[in-house]
Structure formats: C-alpha cells, structure tokens
Image (cartoon, rainbow, N blue to C red; front, side, top):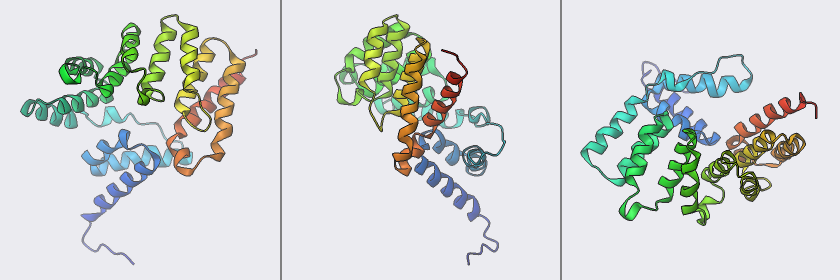
Length: 251
C-alpha cells in the first residue's frame, strides 16, 4: 500500500501527472497543457473540476480558464525569448500563443511579418493567419490565402479548409462554399468539418439536410474507437444540441 508519510510534496506532482495523462488520452492537451504545467495545483484542480466532474453530469458552472489563468505568464516568456533570439520559430510560437489567448491582432501582425523570404509560403503560418482573419470576420483576406495552399495534401482535411468554406459563404459564394464543405465530408472522420457543414445547411434553412447530416454523425459514434470518441466528443455534443434546436423547428 502506498503511503506518503510526510512527503506531501509528491501529491501535487502525482495530481499534475494524472491530469496531463487524462488530457492526453482525451486529445485536449493543446487546450490544457499550459494551464496544468504553469499552475500545478490550481490548474489541476480547474482541469478536474471542468473536464472530469462536469462530464459526470455534476451541476457545476463552466469556468473561464482564460479569465482565471493569466495567459501573460507563458506569453511573457515567449516574448522574452523572441527578444533574446528573433527567429522564425520563436515568432510563430508567440503568434500561436497570442491566437490561442485571444490576442488576434497581435497574432496577425506576427504572422504577416513572418511570411517573407524562405517562409513566404509556409503552410502553418498561412493556415493560422486564415483562422485569425476568420475570427476578425475579415473574410475577403481568407480566400486569397487559401488559394496559396489549396493543393497541398494537408489542406484537404484541415481547419483552414473549413474556414475557407465559411469565408466563401460570407462572401456570397454559396455554391462554391457547399462544394468545399462536401469535399471534406467523409464517413467515420472529419466530425468537426461535418458539424460545420451542418451549421451551413441550417443557415441556408435547409433543415432536413442539416438534420440528416448531424444524425449520420451521431449514428457513427458507437462504431468508433475509444480514442476517436474522446477526441471528437465535443463535436458529437454540439451535434446533439443542434438537433434539439432543429426538432423545435417546424419544417
């Protein structure tokens, strides 16, 4: 039997390790890793409260992690790192951190400044810049960026492809937008993309098509592996919520 005696020092480490392991298995490390590492005890407590307890249907309020955890800590380190060594990788790490923390204008400035020389066609930067412009509703800037990387293999099932389809929709190019959504629609995969396609159909008031799309997603859920279910759980949850809304509409 494991006993700690006076070695309570190890408890936060074990708690932190459990949260990192749990987050990794659920595919949410990008969202939680910094929180858990920077604030071992508080961050782990927040993680357990929001990601474990709330998923057991305990009536707890959703916490705004960004409001609780000052993102300036990790970002400040990256800013200092960039001041000390101004490299492409350091700029993009900071830009990615800005984008994740909601500092979209700062992220855009760094991304655009980095698209020069040998990195003028860097796919990661272009994709992230598309996401940033989409958040700013500057859709006219998304489309030409998408055309630069459209034929790359990674673009086909990327988040940037969804952003491109949404930009086409916002620009009034509905047929082309739907063609893009359809091109990333596949069975037993691409659940985020298919959910967004469902929302597109709702916005076009094609409620029956939207219901069919979202229902197909949910019908596939039982046939996925445990890892696939965990990594796509949020999209299945969102699909269920959207179906409830559709059921309240008479059409």
